[in-house]
Amino acid sequence: MSSVALARIYQQSFESRPYYTLAVTNGTLNALGDVVAQSVQLLTNSQRNEYHHSTYDPARTVRFFIFGLGMGPLIGRWNVFLERRFPPRVGRPTDNSRISISGLTKRVSSDQLLMAPTGLAMFLASMGIMEGCDAQHIRGKFKDLYGQAIIANWQVWPLVQFVNFRFMPLPYRVPFQSTCGVFWTLYLSLLNSAENVQQDRRDSMENVSVSA
Image 1 (spheres, rainbow, N blue to C red):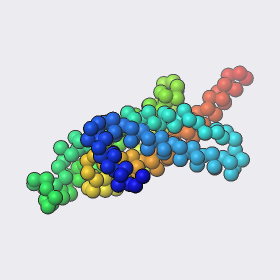
Image 2 (cartoon, helix red, strand yellow; image 1 turned 90 degrees about the vertical axis):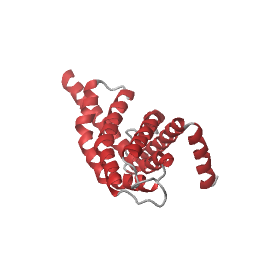
Image 3 (cartoon, one colour; image 1 turned 120 degrees about the horizontal axis):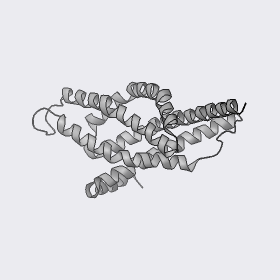
């Protein structure tokens, strides 16, 4: 299937069921990011002759799909809000009107100062809940991961979102963000998985200490 035909199918689906389309698209691309992350982990463990978590975990991919499914419509509504609050063009929105650099800057700033921290917090909390973690372990995720993840976010996403808000039509902003987000999901998936391994090790050491 050509990219033009795929874009046409997406556009038709978006026009008839916008939030359903955003949910499925975002969920699918989120799941893809985790599949890539697990493939990297399996390859790395194989090369290092490590057998911890050496099999593909479909439940983990499902968790990423569910998270993306829920975030798609939320990001879609957020983009609509930014579109109305900070118009992309000066004056009447026509193809010949001048781009508002101020509007674009305010969009990117709002996105990175409001949505990015909120979305990251929702990711860590959602993953913790779906993994069956208790409140102590979820707090541990936030303590260990939130700071480094939000700093990494601010090093990458402002430029991506500037391109997104500047060049992508509103219906395609979530798919564009999700496509770029495959690599971000890869990063988050590896980060979250490494944290789970660290928490398991700490729990094992605590259990040994208690037994002793």
